[in-house]
Image 1 (cartoon, one colour):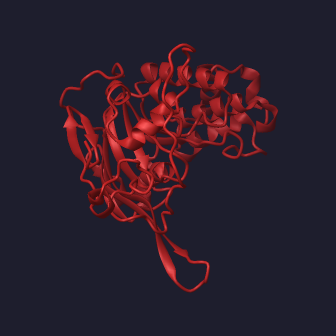
Image 2 (cartoon, helix red, strand yellow; image 1 turned 120 degrees about the vertical axis):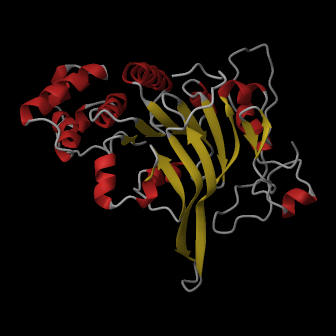
Image 3 (cartoon, rainbow, N blue to C red; image 1 turned 90 degrees about the horizontal axis):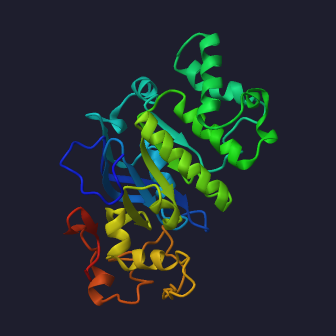
Length: 329
């Protein structure tokens, strides 16, 4: 894992996403006319081996859909996702099944993602059985070993999900993803349902395991303050598009997009003396059923011009490894 904000030498990305689109067809209230929901709209980014790429944005911006699309839990409309020189979107079901051992996900809800009738031990063993890894005895041994890895006592092997706390259940969700030795783990808001103290413990555990197991994370969250503590680079998403992308230190010290500045202004300041101006957005986010023309943020941006209202801004490199889609920067 690289140090946050450290410049990265030229290397081949472990995962390269190009022009990803995930659209849904939805019926209008009248029941006749159909509309297209552009949940993910022409998104491109790259993730390097051993790093954490943070994806942040408000609820409904499409970040969770993006993560699920990469795993083909949701099928893409267009684009490509190249992993180790193979486009995930062009693989057959059998090819994808084999590759899924290397691509795992931790879901947001630590309760509904676990089978309530299955013991924790059997939950951990299930991925091993699906991929045909080990004998039943070896799977049981690996399950006990994974409990130690995620910091839970061996007795949890025999418990059911409802007998565990939210933080313990999320550790099981993480352990279930890691037990097949993946290369990339997509973390879909893994700490948003936890209180602040447990969030901190989970983040520290994930960073520790990343170093020990040489993991690569796509970390999805709506709290940019949380994302800062685990990410190497951050992509800021708004209404299906990535509007800014930069190393974490560069993003926090020199935010370029007005939406990024809004998100950063909402991060609590622990210094009671130092005052920070809070930027309050006016209005509600536009509907993905009817996104605005031009820059999708112009309806809420206090600096929008006529150019912003009519012409979509291209994504450009404003500083080394710092990309932004905004006419004003």
